[in-house]
Length: 367
Image 1: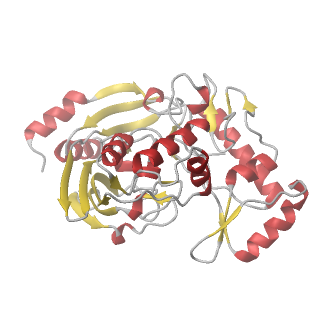
Image 2: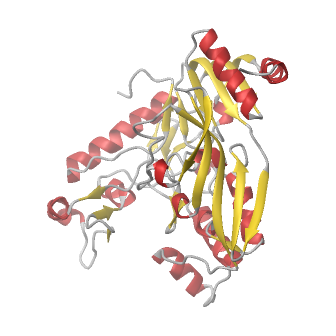
Image 3: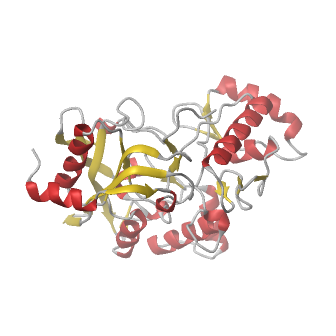
């Protein structure tokens, strides 16, 4: 049951016909029939129960950095999680940090790095909110959310209860979790707890990051230097939100780097031979389970969709082929058509299926 105060706060925040495009980093999409914010577990539950009472579909919104809203919008309730608060407990060599799902992710990373707590530094500059990070096990430059996440709290729509899960129960994989697959739409994450290392060393595992730091003269980089380097690299690729940079009007990386078996890798290499210049090698990275991770950006460019490719008011970033951008006034339909074109080109050239990263909201189909 929801208390009267929480129900009243929810109703006060309830709006009709709210335009969703400005709430997303890509900046496309229509209106939500209803929109509200939930600043507490109780308000969130009030919103869920209200949607049920009205027989309305529900979509839970975070920072809007990884979603694409259809031009027709969403004919239901969009509930934005705005649960704040950060709790800190230091135990010996570790800092236990619990953050509300509505906390801005990079603000949390900045705070932890400033305190010299290691575990987040390579995840700097990523837009969005804390609650979204476990869903696809957000990762970048050699680090993943699952490395430091110990537990989370979530509302279970099946039982209408707040539950606690350990990291193992989240079933993390490469850009994956149970929240993105078998339990999609069942849980609404409300708080996340991480275990960071006090005075730990930065995780410099990624070749591009390592080279950047070496070139800048940082032989034994601090957490702060690692964070600054990651943000600089991301900015160079327009992967840091900047209102003055049209290339950053995106959802970041649009496609997941495909992972293939060794047999599939040999087949892809054969097909890629005609796209490779003398002395060049196709980027490929061995994974811990004996498979091979390919570069989606490399495949896209070699398939003929170059950086700065124009498709109506949409296109690819001039700095990174992996980002589909809103060049100004783009529609969701243009973005979907460009997505389909890229997938088709890569499949035709290499026989590799590219899987999109973002969540698609309000679409009947993606054809």
